[in-house]
Length: 293
Image (cartoon, rainbow, N blue to C red; front, side, top):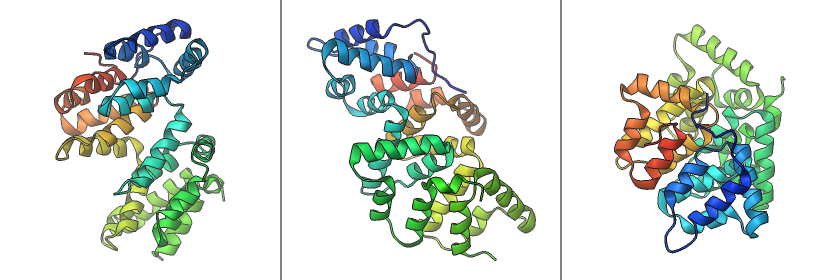
């Protein structure tokens, strides 16, 4: 369930004009930017971008990137991209970090439909002139490479003893319903989840990524709640992870993730974000949560 509160009778041309005014002059009117963009769905935001381009012969996303700064700029920038393009950017950033964040690849492959993942891969190719599989392969090796490349391969969605070759084959070639049935059967058979057994097996980047994959696939809501919880609990808030989950889930299932967070932590997510963030970045996130301050 989505959290953003949209304005149904908004006019793209009017919004484009208001955003132009917000970016005009000596200082940017960040509150106006939040008031408009945090209350428009993906289709509306696309129409605003098109109207802005037609009216002012200028790319709105690039304009906002220039006008804003810090975590607020990053959140607004990602929010305003088309979902497939946004996910392509997230994947590229994750692969090029000094400490690569394979969770992003896992989230895309485990929570998107085959059609959505195909759109992401197309956007990635258009934007970066390389395939997503190529970039994953160039930044990984061995079993980790096989796992991540296999996860983003479309064929894994087609209906078609405990060792890693067998796990890789199953994880990268089975549909989600098949995988869930396999994982449930494994737990019934062994009295323990596969992730717990994997934790005792090999403690390296591959098994950590494999455990994360299974958790994201098994219970996305619980998985994303944990990503947010760890982002807020970390020594210094992990704004990148916090932004990623809120921006990518705000039009999908963020309300359920918020409920899970409240249940798990006995604190509403909006209160936690209010405590751990500040300024226009905080206001923007709260607006996407449907909790304008």
